[in-house]
Length: 255
Image (tube, rainbow, N blue to C red):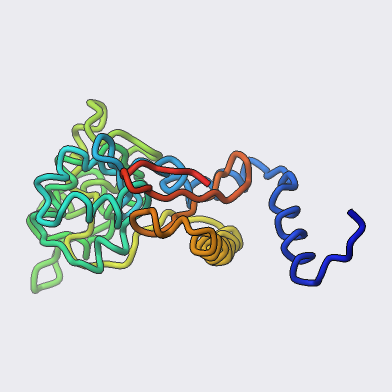
């Protein structure tokens, strides 16, 4: 029990001990902004099976379970590369048509984040903009510099309720939010606003934790009996990073 421990083993022991120690209690403000950045990967973790496949795209959640067989790619491709987490980068790297993006918004979205809706006029085609007689934040002018019409062209969702919502909730029907979920062209990931220091801390921790999880995943032989890679997410309630992967039967295994 008193045998000396080499430097590498000591560092590993200290690292494990630090991760097991209780995290310092966050203030409600810190929790709010932290949760806004990690809620998708936290709530979707492991939900990547034939019976239940959820993905995050541009800040919203889509249920693609019934769409697995209809997708041009194989169901396994979606399960391995997109299910159970934020798949925005994968979605945009492949590229998707305007019709595919609109279809996803109309038919597959189950949770939307109003902070990630399309809000800029440049995100819309002219026929998507609506005339609003009450608000005049965006005007339409003719060649003589005169405003056209009694109202102004404005984005349909500028004044929608705030927070996480079900897009088909009756109280939201007038906003037609399902039409404004995804950008209609290849875009950088849409993210809700937060405090810079919180976003930076989570990004740095994610990089380090993902490397650690992948090293452990490869060294213990788990990778040879799994589909895809290991995935990580931050649990904002416990203040800890966790990981999961799909086994050979496409079942989620949490580490």
